[in-house]
Image (cartoon, rainbow, N blue to C red; front, side, top):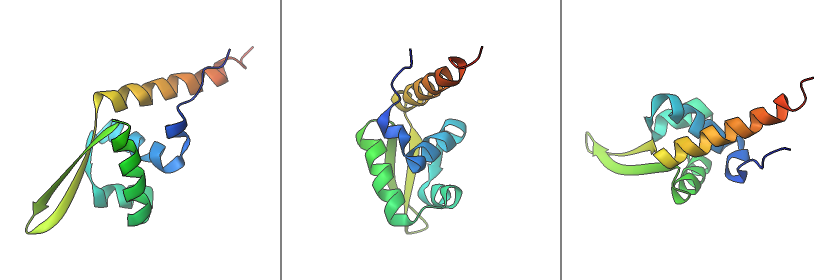
Length: 97
């Protein structure tokens, strides 16, 4: 039987953000923008949704007198990503003969 996939991670951009953070563990907003190809506005909205879900933590600070936003994956985000991957893999495994 197929396991339900986390609807929050069915968004390509949100999945891309978490995928990148699974490897990097943290990234500046502009790095995520470059890696995902998202606009600032769209990325900001999706980062907010991931933050509200507890999947990432967002720190707003300054670097050389310029605003700096750093996104970090949380243990809850790691668990959500691993669960999503495991459940998605189950879809493929169930079809193998």
